[in-house]
Image (cartoon, rainbow, N blue to C red):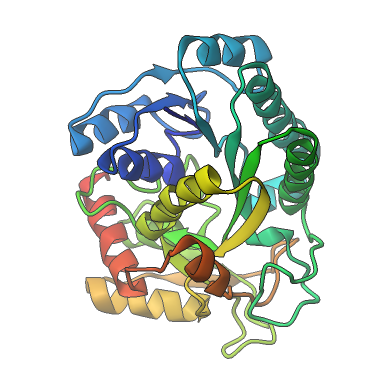
Length: 331
């Protein structure tokens, strides 16, 4: 059985679908601070399968311990955590407290209950902006914001714990920028308040929830002055976790993998493409740069292809169409 922390969130819920459709039994823990219980029901609807759900904060060692004692868990996929770069700059203590304590709590529970495998939801923000692009797993690490530092620190905590525990295995998955939604239109990215990620901000603006999209900076040293990122369909990202479970079962120690498309797309290119494929308009206004943002980065995903047998299957256009389907079905 796989414990999925943060399993009602955007990436977590899509990964739950992927796990269930690949024959895994799961148990989900989520405190629903940035997600909704309806997502759990929709995962059940999509897959036709039931699973236990615990509304707990995984920082709560006692609650997490009770969960682990009640189920025969083989592997933890640890998504639970705060995830907004800009918010982390404004609220660094909340990010360090939540993200690091939750990871330590998970590792303690694993030790207490003999769970040997962990897959950690990391981020491309662990890489230094000094690197040449594309980023490889050997690129220099060093962060520009507290969110990235929490991922960096959690990677180190996991690495040290695995080195100290015989037979333990960890996979650190460094995500680039997930986009899109499940093709059913039942689950997708549904942030509370003003979205911190680009595509839900685009789609919510297109449907009229916001007067205009804010483009944070148009004076970067990029092809059109706006930030360039590597966008990967969320279902491709979810499939990477299934591949990582198989890797954990065959290997001990800690290994990091980039999960990205290997291609860079600018903010203005995303807006133009979204308008074209969905036949909508997205009004936007250029705003000042956000603290902690880099001009450009994208992944070299060759290691994941070589060792995990993982490749992206969906295009950027697929992600834009799926996002608009999700948005129009869930106004």
